[in-house]
Image (cartoon, rainbow, N blue to C red; front, side, top):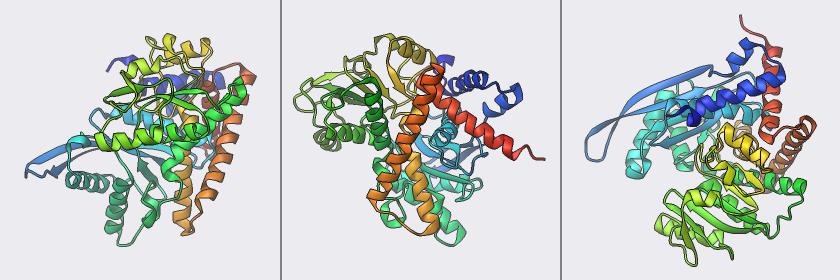
Length: 416
């Protein structure tokens, strides 16, 4: 893929920029730019038609200085090692920016889950879980859901790991169904964290959230939940999209009804009372708030000058290229970076892990209250750095996150 949109090159360039701001030496910078450990696997799955198909998968652990590694597993046709490396690095910064004791990891399998049966997906999941179990564990590396994986996927992984150990190990995975050790509030956590940070950003720039117009690119778990949470706060959702395209209604879209429509038809396109638009057109709409909740690198140097939103809250990982960041900052768009905006998911995953280890579970209200406190405090910390140093929010978040990781590395020292 071209360097501009290679996520690992982007992640590394972000480290270079912030390392210079922090005055880090070349050796430590190089250490932060590369994963500590990565596992590549090829494994066979017997498909429903009797054929044997070989899949490629990856599990990358970027940094372990602050604790066991944490990060999702995605099933996607475009997943490759550079994407997984980048995502693992972003997870390190994400955990650090909200102050939870994890390093970053990520996993992926190159496959098209849309073309696979439930039986095939279960076989693929269980085999992949067995392959990566040599570096996975409740004290070493704890996966979670990501693109095209869900609580059922996590249940299969937990069961596979548990069967191989001879006893139930709920804390080996997060994002599980509630009956087998999942946490209340986990399903909404990524979106809830994003909306909390958007609410706080509105206060800083003097934008009234009630009545503010919102466009959401990506109507999966994070995007659809963010849409109805911000709608329930009084904002007006005017456009939403998925991989098939987008829909627009300047009078407002009911996100709850749009979710039902997508569940029935497989897409939001054709939702009653809307006009069809492209994903590219959605990004450039004249709205107050943009929520990119799809995949990486959707905003580049080409379309960044056309972004008209006042706030962009990144529910997705890596939706902006570095050049897009620069352009949007110069144009006065407050970008709430992914490592802050969507850190609600890993924060409640941390809560789930703690609950699983202790076999003591919290109410949804307690989970949400704890999440609120962490997200507000983290936003304030990042915003204060951005104002003090006159830099954009992403650079501020990276200074906070990388500073915490570097401190942990230096305190621990290098073994031997």
